[in-house]
Image (cartoon, rainbow, N blue to C red; front, side, top):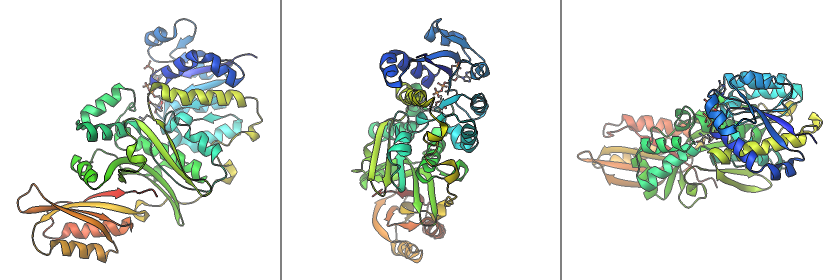
Length: 435
Ligand code: NDP
Ligand code: HSE
């Protein structure tokens, strides 16, 4: 059978990895796909760099639209990134009747509704396994392996860069900036690393996971996003003392009144599976009503782990190339006409446990007054520690609460901060036991 022709847009970390993996494992891959897979055209900006990698066998140019519009190309693999040019290229590829494989979570989280609708109308596939959790086949698991289940929640470490930073800061005591530079050198970070650090990249991925889990449209604009840039090393140390580690988590949860969609640093028990996911590794926990809790773990970023997912998608598309579009797996796991309009909850409606740290005057009655404020807001204290503060005559108080409504926590924090003997703002972190 004739080989399937691939047009590759971008030959950076992921594009380069895709080229290498396809070349190295060509024999094995074509035995799986049923025909050989050939990258015949590549678009980049820097021709010399690309030619050094590809040699002369491949047509390399600087116009990605020429690749997308080439009638000989069956699959367009978009690995340029961003959500402007990439959007135009993907929509043009679909309009040309080509299947698309992309690792671009920013693009799909923001323009997924438009892109998947265009692809469905045209009867082509848009595959995006590499867009979430790098090499971990989480999209495949959620779209196909878990279809029997009513999914209750999904929670995970879905940004390799921030997990690498938090792990290195905690275990080697390295400063934030040093570890970030190392993550960039290793190819983990986004072109704009603030996407990683501020939780935006994780929110892009979580938005896609929520759609796959609950059959809702992609709604990145409704995600609550907090990153790790404001995290104090003091809280990392205190968390450890309390038996927790701090991780940047993406959590989406079905509740009776809507769906939680949130990315933020959280304390997780040190003995839990997620606490022990270190470096650039990712892990996603999915809880289904039939299967219970399942865990997916692996490399979440980097050249070949991400290429592994891209190539798996190329093989999938190759296998289903000639299938009737009606019989393919829907892009977002649910049939497009069966999507739900369940609302995304505001962060104030989230229910979880909290870690609160504050500096207070070390004098009689202070603890009792703070406990009274918490009690008045309906918040129950799980445990508490007091330690001398650096400031004269002060003490640091750290509370772990039981589950509480975030709105009530915010009310209590505002009241605590207005108390005369409270000498700092209150540091608030969420605590997730994921049980
Ligand atoms: P890189 O920056 O390493 O590579 C981008 C590639 O796109 C480069 O080859 C660049 O060409 C090319 N490019 C950029 N603009 C143009 C243009 N106008 N015309 C033609 N080519 C262009 O990015 P990554 O490989 O890291 O990321 C690619 C995508 O994969 C992104 O969407 C990212 O979010 C996603 N992703 C990345 C992961 C990772 O670990 N890095 C993991 C999972 C997903 P040139 O080199 O010539 O400038
Ligand atoms: N910048 C991303 C990360 C790449 O660090 O996880 C993988 O999506």
